[in-house]
Length: 403
Image (cartoon, rainbow, N blue to C red; front, side):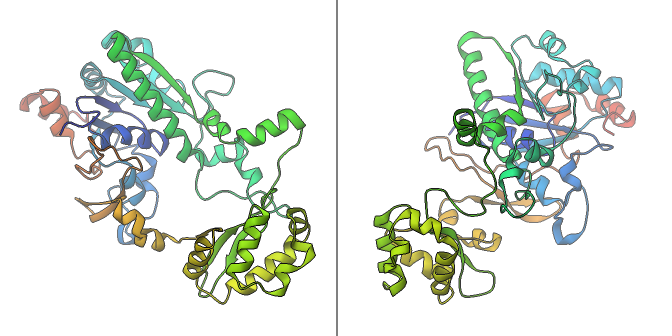
């Protein structure tokens, strides 16, 4: 069955995470994506651990592999005139050009939007970087780790008596691609209706700020600056991650209303402290939250995290295991929805890749091929996609165009 993006052709200059995750949406649903790298400057994720069997190598980095399945991999020397010529031939073939460089890099190669548009008038150019391609700071380089601080996420993570904490990984790398995918889909639909392409400029900084909208509104309206509150919530108690039986096993429990508090008490057998006047209202539970957490954890420590979750959920109280990465791979829900695609990688062998969260009944996302080794498809792209002859390909190869 034809895929939803089948026939869409993408030249992908993106690197690191945001750009590759965005174009992965198109690739997983059928688009032909050609990922451009350089042997002298491969994608930074190729040199980022973990590596297969802890043996470093540009074709052994799992982080890169997870974000690049269903794409062709090509290396080009962008400082070689013939390399630029090849790029222009790819642009003439493509529907979308995607890049995630600091502002000005593509222009340095003579590949700014106006130049690209002259090659392919209806092209869609998707650009994403730290702070967009306009404004005072557009040329500041950086990654999602920097943006976590700039957007304010780090200020909110952790406990009030400690310095700000970095969320695990560059959090903005997880949210910005959702904006990018929506922009590309809208632009493709616009082109289908009008025959016109356009330039898309995604600021990852601004995408991240959107996810703090409630706290931003609180400041706009009440001039209240949000601060670190650990695992607590201003309108719930108990609300925390509680230790359970076993090594480093935890379960979260959240009680929002007085009715849920009564249900919580019934689940744990209504010990006397659940009837304590101090805990009879939300305000009281918030006032004595540290004592409440100690009492709750005395109960959870006697049970496994799975038992705590099951009992709470059966009683109508929100609860969930704090899953480890091992738990996630064994999670029956993720298994049943085929979230982890096992694809045979040329260098690493069978390797789990992240599937897509959205399931389309008529055009589902599917694994077609693993992430490419560096320059794996140079010959295929040149001969099968661009129609280059064997003799011309040999000349390009010997001339260092694919370095």
